[in-house]
Length: 179
Image 1 (tube, one colour):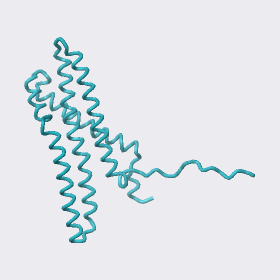
Image 2 (cartoon, helix red, strand yellow):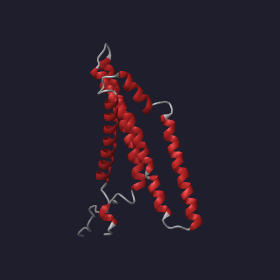
Image 3 (cartoon, helix red, strand yellow):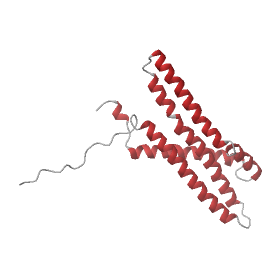
Image 4 (cartoon, one colour):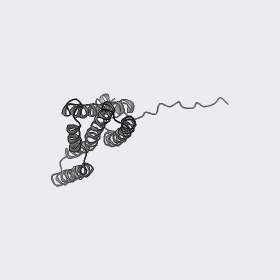
């Protein structure tokens, strides 16, 4: 077994680690939303904070981040070919691993803010607030699951060879029958 293989994770541990990373980022953005809204007592401050995190340009900015990452990868590929540098591929792999992180940051910031809004609606009831809070909480959960799946899938695609143990062929082999 190579030394590198000692650091590889099973697929279950990999997914669990990715989940913990995503969840911790959600907790950070949720906490910031709570703090900036005076512990969910100021609707105006919560709305202002949420508008900073979730707006018309957010999805476009995410797409532009991906374009920029691909541009940088192309730049490194060109440099690697021109100068015949053996380290360029490892740099490109590291840059590619930024794509899932970008998805996680975008998804966790929106999820954290959406969770804070849902809790705010629940804590400050009006005529329809209970149904609104529940509906918004469900929408937040579905959004979080979707962003986690996208981020984890990209992360798996880019890390499957270097960070994840390959499934060994330890299946039960049929034995030759006694004739």
